[in-house]
Image (cartoon, rainbow over all chains, first blue to last red; front, top):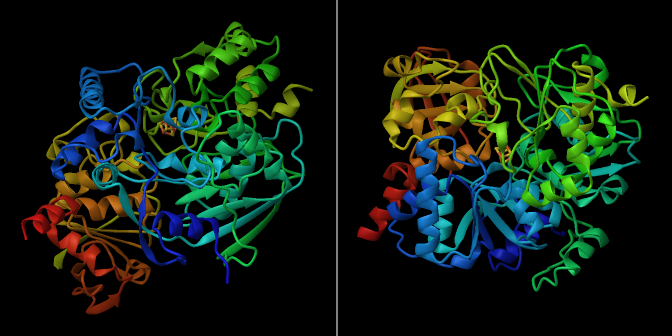
Length: 419
Length: 164
Ligand code: SF4
C-alpha cells in the first residue's frame, strides 16, 4: 500500500522510512514562520528556557498584521521583535510594509517543494501551493521549534480532490474554494490533509493555487497540497533554488475520501454571514446593499486579483454609498499593480489604497466597520465581529464579485455588470 | 488527572474571534485577557464560569486563527475543561500546550445539559455525569499528552522534566 503526500513528507522530515495516517511523529522543521505574534513567541521561547535559537537561518519573521503599528502597545511589541532579530542574528526578517507573510514567503521563494514548514498563523496551508507540507500552530509550538528544531505531529488522513473542467470567465479559484467549503462544511477537512489534482488545478496560476490552499484552512484542514508541475518548476527554475524535492503521492496511496468536482458550470459564489460554509451562488443574494468592500488579504490581494477588479471596474465609478479599500498583499504586488495601471484605475474610480499588509482583515485598524454595516471582503473569514462591530455582516467573495458590487453598491454578479 | 465541575453550554463552531477578538491580542497579562473572553458576545462570561466551569460545546470548537490567547483567556477565566464534539486542530494543540484539558466526546455532548455536575478522568478518558448517573468513554490521548496537561502545560512540563 502506497503513501499520500502528507505521509511521505512527514516521514522524510521525521527520518522514518514510512509512516501512515494516525501515527505520531517528531519532524524536523525546515522553516519556522511568525508575524506580529513573534513577541508572544519570544516570551514563550524564554519561558521554555531558550537562550539562543537553534538555527537562526530557519526562522522567518514578517511584520504584517499591524502595519504600521496602530497603538503604542503594538509599536512596543514590534520594537521588541526588531531587537530580538538583531540579538539572535536572524537573517530572514521583513519589517512592516513588505507585505503579508504568506505572499512574502512565496515571492521570496523561501518555501520550496518537499519542505515541512510551520508557522504561527493558521493560513500556513497556503504554501501547499508550492508543494510543501505547511501548517499552522500556536506560539508555544513555534517557540519549541525555535529551541529544538522539531515538532510533533499526528500524521493526518488525506482527502483527495480531483477538480476537472474549465472555469468560465469571471469565475476564479476563490469560487472553487467557496463551493468546496460550502459542500464539505467548515469542519469538512478538520485535521485532514487535502491533495488536489485534475485539469482545473493544472490550469490555475500559482497565485490562484495559493488562494485555494489558503481557503482550505477554513474547512479545518491541517494542510493542503498541490503536486509539483511544470508551472511550479518554471517559478523555481528562475531562482536556482538548491532545495527542490519533487515528491508525488503513490498511485495506490490510501485516501480517506475522494471528491470529484466539475467546475465547468461553476458560477460566482459568495459566503454569507457568519460562516464560511454558508455559501450560495451570487445570483441568490442580489440586492444586498454594501457599506464597505475589501479587495486584499492573503487570500486575494495578488496581482491577478487587482487585474480582474480593474478590468471589471473599467471606466466606471465606485458607487458613492460604498467604501472600496484596496490592500495589495505585498510591496511587489503594489509596485506591479501600479506599473500595470490597475491601481490607477481602481483609485480613479474611488478606491482607497492602504499599505501592503493584513489591513482591515482582522478588525484592528484601517477600516474597522461600524454597527450593522454590511461588508464584502475577498479575505477568508466572516466570523461575527471579525472586522469590527459584532453586529456587522460580512460576506466573502472573489475580487471579481467585489469589483462588480463596488460599481453597483449591491452584491452583484460580475457577468451581469460587464455585460 | 480528575476534574470536577458544573457545565456551561455553548453551541457549534465557537471561533477564536468570538473567544478573544483581534483587538485584544496585544494584552499580555493572562488575567486581563480572561476579562476580555467573549467580550462581544457574552460580556457576563466571567460571572458564568465562576459558577459553571466546564464548557460543553458542539462541533469545531476553536476554529479560526492560531491565536494561543484563545486557550489562555479561557484557562485564566477559570475554565477547568472543555468537552466538545470536535475541536479545531490548532486550538486543540494550543489548549494542550497551555494546560487546558480538551476532551472530544460527541456522545456525552448530546446528553449533557447546562448545570449538570461532571467528573472527568482525563487520563482514562471517562466522563461521569453525576446529575444523570451516566458515564461516557471519550477519545483517548497518548500518555505524554496527558502528562503535559497534568503538569499544567508544555512549559511547566519541560521545566519539570529538566529538574528531574
Ligand atoms: S490577511 Fe487576514 S487571514 Fe491573512 S494573515 Fe493577515 S489577518 Fe490572517
